[in-house]
Image 1 (tube, rainbow, N blue to C red):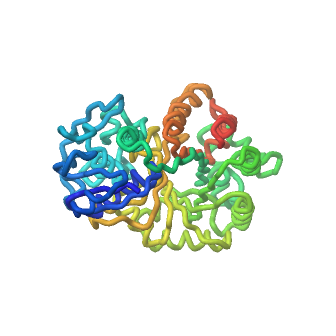
Image 2: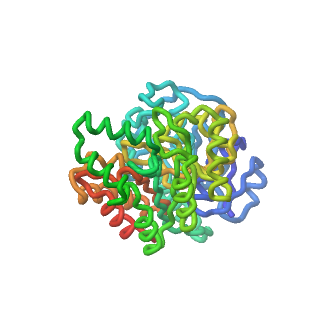
Image 3: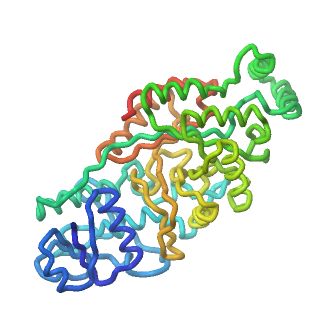
Length: 431
């Protein structure tokens, strides 16, 4: 049991310490503000405050974990043993940076509370992030800092009890368009055919008619192949189905279509099925609840996991809506067209609402790899090499490696054979 002394126990302090020590490092911790309790403690102990008490293991604190509200902080990124870090401390601190305040800054997405220029879908652009600007988006720095800190701690307390965690891999299949041509209804089918003819997309015309005539199966209908892969390599997978009415950005098969419902039920027999929330439900809490309820009725079990269409996250409102809709887990934390660790970590964490100054009952599972971020790859080999970079980083800290592959790309007809690429990914990275 590690005792942590501080001058003031705040919700920010408790949240950060539990994430770093308990979830990442597997160390049991207790807190105290009483000097006499700290002095009497005979086990491992550290002080996190402005001044040390004696000659103990001391980390000089920044003010961030002991204040309220949001301020435009000055961030100066420097190097700590080969890893970018910020919130520099001064002697006699055992480490030169306040990694706890820095971790809180990244985990809470502090910078997304500040004013920024949103993209066309109202998203926070990766180019606006401190990680992108300082070239550490490709690193799970929170986890790296934690393990670097552990090395220093073991030098002082070699017998400290640590529960080593194991590397995990989860494959996310994003099904926002379950079929390319089939089950879309006569009006949408004819409109699509006329559009293809008018734009001289003769290959699509041939594909569409052959699917309608049942000469070939729909190109997006690769569910049996995916399930067989997952079973063969014992991969944990989650299929996120969109179950929403047609709109400008939501163009899936109608949720009233019985073939679509049967597909979802059949997938649910072999894998976890969750909700890919529609574009329209982004700021419509009642619609979000309705989509959740309808999908739950199809699979006859609760729907607890969510993913937002186009990875749209508006901090803190998106997570407030998900909490109100009684989701327990979310898999949206990442960027669509940029690989990397948006929250600086490859470990799941609870959302902390800075405006309300409290931890929320929804767990965020950050991903680093999205197939749309690989579209500029020239070959399957190049795409695999990019994925390998992020896998290696997660593996080093025994984190949780999550990949997002979209049903449209897996069934698409492009230069890269995405289904083949996906097969190689799970074959290589399954646990």
